[in-house]
Length: 553
Image (cartoon, rainbow, N blue to C red):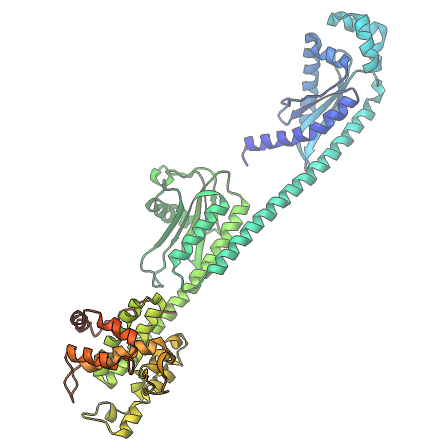
């Protein structure tokens, strides 16, 4: 808090305490004036006796009494002790220090005319000096001069007690106000933390998560701009993440430079940085453009600072509450980033497993690998055309890629046989969907694709395998894979037969729609530009696995 704010705050507290004291002084026929800690007179509307009004209105008396009050107030402020004096006209002046939580914030001066002023000789001299009529003034004086000079100590103790009561009330009000503000602040903090925690998902992109954090912080803290930057080469985030909410007057280039050259070096040795005054920017004035104040905290993962969260330009000053709030949010954000790092590493492990599985299929039967890629691509296109959500489209693509993974468990003599299979050999081949499902069950993240792998040889008329499912009892994934698998099998050259022409394969789909294939999926597939589709499938790179770099679950 700067000096001006401190003075204004003290004056406001003092003025509030004086409102009740002035009323009490008026009831007792006394004049009360208040002075702040710099001995400046506070405006007051203290009602008092007519006699006192006449004295105050008299220019000569006014100057003398005003000077005496000011001098007494200065003594009290300098010594921080109560004191007394007498005005040039005989009024008694009682000075009392005013404190707020043991801190001197000003002084009160109580003034009252004494009965000693009614002495004929003293009263005559007073009227002569003030050029007032004795007979007219005496009536007012008899009513106003209620106390003797010897009662000054009692009056001073009484007003000291009044002040102490006011101070206690003021302390209680300030404590209540502070408690209310703390409760409101804590509620906002808890609400923000709850919101962030409830929306925090490891599969969520860091940019999306941090954008929400910045938006929420800007609203709660009442700042112009909130900025987040993350740079971490260990995750799949290839470039720095830069997120900003708020004013367009400050661009991300400026904030990136400010963070890298000024803020981050200071945060390496501190849990937070608060600057309520302009920082030294003579070497790079561009950094300070539009920035009046800032508060920043680091974002850390495994004790490594990987970024920062920074708020700029609060209407007032950043304080300890702001530091606590943004530190709490940074802690939550760091937890998210750490979890995201682990999730990315698990995702990379999953991709490695999938690549190993596809390579295993390729090693078992080179035909199967190319076939699986084409089935995966056709299945993906069907799923997208049906309007399925992206995550399900990705799952169907994976199911197509791995639908024949069970052939790993089929003897090569049967799998690679030239010519037709015997009934016994065909029975063994029919086991590959179940073998594939059993393999994939060991990989928890691949559970959503098992249904498609298990059911891709089921038929709408119930004559498929391994479970003889009928119609829509067959999962949608299985019905999609069934058509894609059959189409590629029909149009692919085999060692023991030639592939069908596109016209004949299309006619075969129409003939078997409703018995082997789902009629709706068949109609959708046949509505495409088939020659273009086959050209695109031929162009697929055998070493390229599209969608394996996506997040699936």
